[in-house]
Length: 125
Image (cartoon, rainbow, N blue to C red; front, side, top):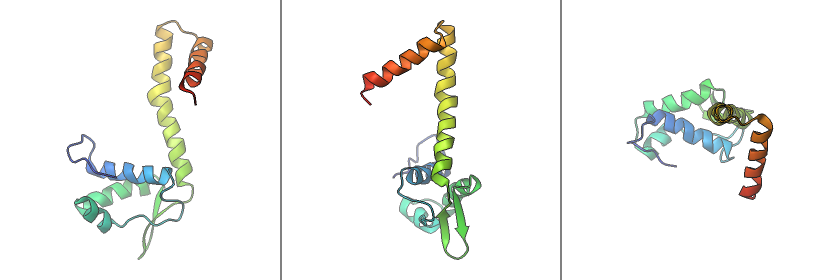
């Protein structure tokens, strides 16, 4: 995991995405403790307030919670919430624009479905 200081995405958002990805792929499971704000700040050479802002984004989404005096932990159902969030994002960012383009090209729903099915078969997965 690395931070890109010249990226358009703010560092605190990169921290949030990095931790979200770690939760989603199972590196941190429910009730696991994540690295502390200080550990993140030292590891990535960033201001602790920046790390805290990224973590607070995940707290606000219900993915992390704080145990007073112990640190931050992965909330129950966090992976499922991330999965649903990403499905919603996939729909908004890919499916809706694809359907709009298909309509402009005169491709009906059945033809579009057939094209998608062909894509799955061509990909070999």
